Structures are given as C-alpha cells and as structure tokens.
Length: 181
Image 1: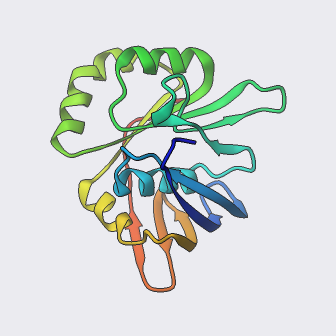
Image 2: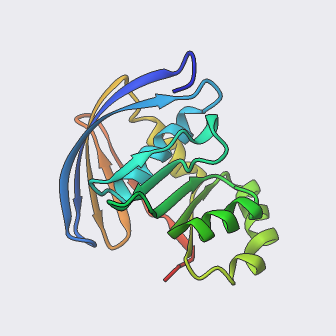
C-alpha cells in the first residue's frame, strides 16, 4: 500500500447473470496519491465485471510488475490479468505471456482512441487479450458513487454493469474493442 493512500471500505454484492456468479465481497480499496477518483471507481467496476473469489487488487500504480487486478489459481499461476488505462504494448505482451487471460479496460476519451489506433494491429495477434473501452461520461458517473464507506450492488446482464448505492444507480456498458479467447 502506498504511503498516504486514502482507504475506502467496500461492501459489494455482485449479481452477474451473464456468468451466473452471485456473491458478496467485503474489502478495503486503497487510492494511491496519484490516482484519480475516476480511476479508483473504474478499478471497482472492473472488479465487479470480473468478480471471483480469487480476484484481488494488485499494487498497480505503486509496482510496475503488478496488474491493477489479478486472479491466480490455487498453484499461484495468473489466470486473469486486468490493467486500466493505456498500458504500453510491451507491458501488454508481457502480461499475455504470463497470464491465461489479459483484459485492458481502456478509458480517457481521445487519448484512449489514439492508444487503440496505435496498438490495434499488434494487439490483434494476442489471442488471450480482451480490450474494453469505457466512455468518459461513464467514468464520471461512477465517481459520483465514491464515498469512504460504500455499500454497492453490481448487477451485470448482457454486458451492462449497473452499479447501485442507496442514493444512485450508474449504468456502464463497456465497448468491446477486441475479445480474447
């Protein structure tokens, strides 16, 4: 955990009708001093989309060799590697070599478009890579849910994530740029 990180307590109830996954998760989420609230909430949304009992938050921003989220099997092998933003192509290739599945949750408007245009050709050869785009308006809407202590319900159906608190409901539909195997 980074020094001076802001800690958020999260109770997340996941109902994923696409994958038939239904579970509750309770955890602390650390916001690195250089991390924006939007990126923090996008990490939480990515957790909800790929929720699993073994999915955990990596050290991400504070450690270059860690994913933002990852899931390991019982032997310690990386099953799923999830990064946010626009990682460089070397990082993505390295992640694809280390993990069974790699997901990049791309966000950032024009910067995200430029990143995809620059790397789409190279990424097309990576069979285990999925790239999702999240619209800037969706990231901003997710930020409105941010509180130091959050009780949220995530419902996923037909690729759409509904993230709900007692006061607000946010719908996020990531656009699939590339679907891995």
